[in-house]
Each structure stands twice: as C-alpha cells, then as structure tokens.
Length: 127
Image (cartoon, rainbow, N blue to C red; front, side):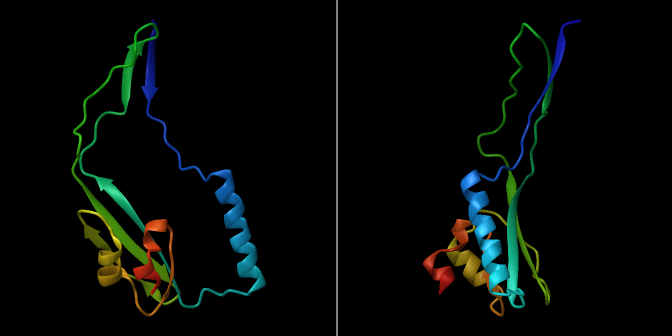
C-alpha cells in the first residue's frame, strides 16, 4: 500500500583510534599484573523525563513526518560506581557534573579512580 515505518537508530560506537588505545591499555594492565584492588569504576548517564514517538508511518514518496520536541527537555543525571569492596551510593542530580561537584560529592576517596570520560580527568580531580 506504499507505507513505510521509519525508526530512530542509535548505537554507541568506539572509534578506530580509541579501539587501539583501549587495546594498548589492556596490554599494559596485563604486563603490570594489575588486579584493580583499589580501583573504583564509575559511570554516569542522563535520563530524559520526556520522550516523543520514535516511529512514524509515511508513504514511500512522502517525506518522513517531523515531531517537535522541547529545546530543553526535562532530564536528570545518574552517577554510581563499583569496586571490589562494593558499590558507591547512586547519585541523582540536575545540572552539569563538573569537577567541583564530582570531587566534593561523588569521588570515593579510598579508591583509585578509573575515569570513563575526559571530563572526570581535570587537574582538580587528578590531585
């Protein structure tokens, strides 16, 4: 009948240059017999509190339908970590996770920190 279903596609990609860097890091860990005894692995994510339909139907000769979304949708950020000695508390916050908030509120001071994102490697955080 001429109808198509169009969906939003998303996947997390690791660029080729970063693949090589990650592999080199793993080789260094093996060479140094790293056991990650005092390392805290952390991650943060953003949860959108508003969503819009991801699927629209249109005929093949018509353009896909557009649906307006707010410029600044409601969202919160979630941060947590895990280590051999347990998990950190889950932190839910609004706004940006900058180095001040990270160091003052979230950093488990009894662990080495394994950053997942360059924003967590400011000079203040390293110190």
